[in-house]
Image (tube, rainbow, N blue to C red; front, top):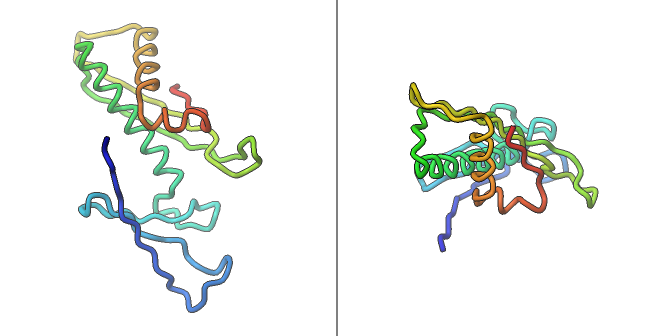
Length: 149
């Protein structure tokens, strides 16, 4: 199987390291080519202009779901022209009373080449199959409710 890695870099900018008085802003490198500024979510004092781990989790799920959907659609010979998603990670308390991402909603919109149509039911069934085969969804299956709306 594959091992897939990132590099994360953080350093303290403040003179002292004390609770609530340091920045969590850091940089994540993907494949040594791409750099993303990351911070805590704004509700936890992070910079709203940076991404946060909760968004990154929603992004990973959305991307995995889309790639799985596209692979299944290609096998079914569906001429997908575009795919758009708006993913939302919801924070709340898990059954242990801990803060966590409790639910992620996906809102995929699929467009096909002119003249090709599938019923809403058939499209929903394909989205359900994509969800069942998505690696990230399977990783989160026991702890996060995932809705494909």
